[in-house]
Image (cartoon, rainbow over all chains, first blue to last red; front, top):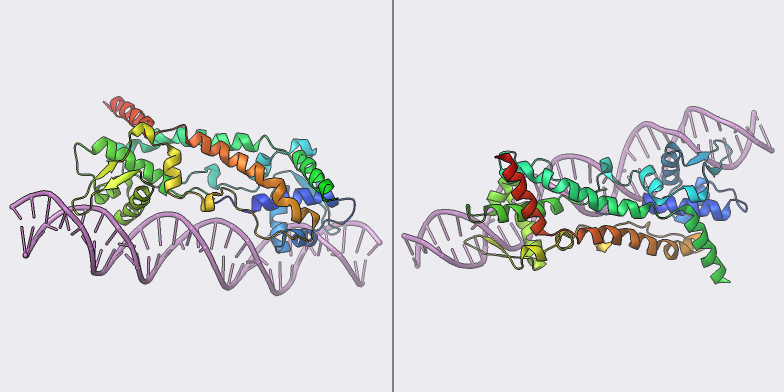
Length: 146
Length: 146
DNA sequence: AATGGCTGTAATTTCAATGGTTACATTAGA
DNA sequence: TCTAATGTAACCATTGAAATTACAGCCATT
């Protein structure tokens, strides 16, 4: 399985907002064009980002603005806003191991902390990257083109 | 999304084999009983573990044996054997960003290395745990029960 | 060499999640 | 009021996970 593309789409959205905000009106249609998907998909993701308090969205007139500085929004914030992982658990544990089996009874106690540690390693890395890194990286790439 | 329960099932299988190998004949039916699933699910997973070279399986008579020492099989080996992640990519990237958009054209170059780093952080942690840790942990838990 | 118990695997079903799409009500600025 | 947005419900197609049935193939034991 894979983490939903909603995550990379959200990062794409933030990058577009940053790059184009002075030049264009960045609407869900505009974003759908860059990302090559349906505007409704974009709106659903934006709704999630809004609920997580990462952006404000102007109804009627359109327009997206961040609620914090670029450096204050990490990949982890986006990952969480998007609900990238069900129930907050990266690993799907088999539902009902047999409690009458010595191993079945104890398998959760055996594995849970290890699985958490593995997930934490990933999420800690997610916290290392911010939207400011995206601006920096994109500015560099665009400069290289010319 | 979540990583398939085939991963935790595989770890459960290894633990059972280790705990019960002298006491019972550990067949796919036996394992299905402890894990509380269908024997065919177990066999499919065992087939994957065999293809990855982690176990040998005796046809006809039944029986599972590891090809290496417990300390030489890591969680990562199991994760990989199971094909826990499609194409080896943890993150599903949106398929076709618009190449005519400056952001769309460069979004992969911008994100790919960061996504890889995040996935690597998780996989490196996976490599830290071995089946020997499972034996140790389970022995401890079983001792506590008495 | 026949049998019984096990593995290997194909085929099918159910279920849930993703991603896409249409349609329309709601909003707010011009 | 008109226009261009967003918000959201409803629906569909596709995919993958997990479960299940069925049966062929294998092999130690008798």
